[in-house]
Length: 335
Image (cartoon, rainbow, N blue to C red; front, side):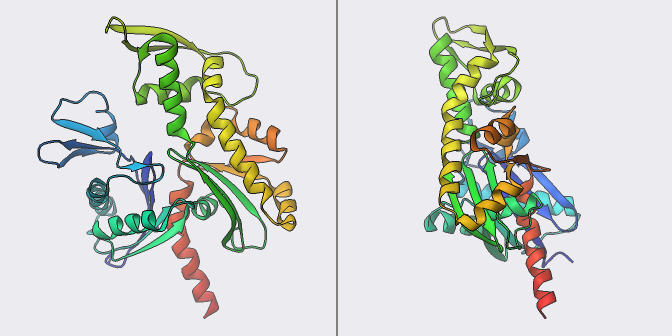
């Protein structure tokens, strides 16, 4: 019954999500794999592999096969997608044979990068692979009127990239991509702690700091947090105290890059569409949209209403999955 199934995949730098018409979102796993360095086989993926970061023996390496929204390790990505397809089959309670897959790509991806994504998905068992630009998928998933002659502006702050797109009549009027998003914020926190305190922390710890006491660039009540890491001088475990104002300063550069790309996109759209954006505002999606005070800060600096998508972490996956059924319905109406 599912031999001609249609599924949507959000193959993200940080997380991979799978959406189906029958059961909605069925998979939401970190895009991380643990590989046996001798056999080159994947021993764990997703949440299980994420728990292994920084805790594995020499024989096991934990890697992220995607970087900045595109494939960095083709073979590992293909293996990961096969495992995801198998898990999707179990979730659906049937063998998912040769489905038609719609997968999103960054709007700034090159033709070579797009081809790599297409080939990896096809080799994982897909019958047909259709590519979709990330801003359009995010807008559909956020419930915006993408098929109407009204400008909808989406800012998708993911793990590897921030995608800014303005959509009208089902197409992208203007878009920009910048490689400044959640991962760069984590890297900045790791670098700061190392430079300021001579302490090394891992990516999971940096991400936890960002989520717990990270704030966008607005005044806020100061928060404190204890963080454990390894002292560079003694090599022993050490606990340090961080404040939200310190982390706010660390995130400033990444946030200003995001602001710059939002402004640059607004500057290149036709004047007729500018009024729509003033009226309807900007919609934030992606994990970075959940940074504390992000909505308030962005609204204050671009002087346009800013809204948070209903499901910011899932918007792209939902839009990627729903896009097929929207186009299918339009074809039936046309007939």
